Amino acid sequence: QVQLVESGGGLVQAGGSLRLSCAASGSILSMNFMGWHRQAPGKQRELVARITTGGSTNYADSVKGRFTISRDNAKNTVHLQMNTLKPEDTAVYYCNARARTIGTMTFDDYWGQGTQVTVSS
Image (tube, rainbow, N blue to C red; front, side, top):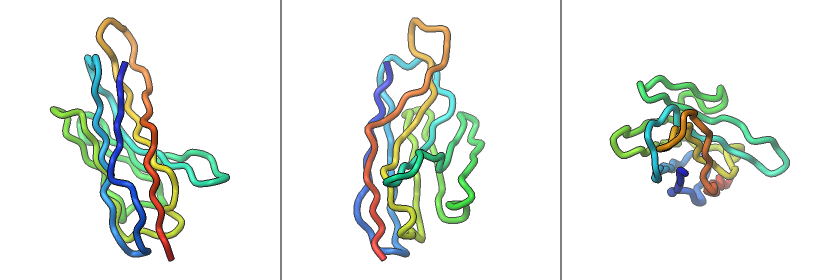
């Protein structure tokens, strides 16, 4: 099993910044991508940003130029630097990772518990 623990959410004014972090632990044999999704009230969960082990990234159009994802492969951590935040960024942000654990032959998806980000206007 893989545990993902997020930190860094909170309340910020529009135009401000927050940095989210996620640490993966457990019987990890290999990691594939790590990333962040978000879910606003009444909306579906959506991909925010994703980064592969090799450092390739992709972002939702709504956050391009404002958010930056990074990871530390040695520590199995991923970060999301969020700048110029807007009220529409308000959501619960979930860390997501695809990993293979010891004793298994496949990669599976794992999710964190989520951290609230609230942007006031």
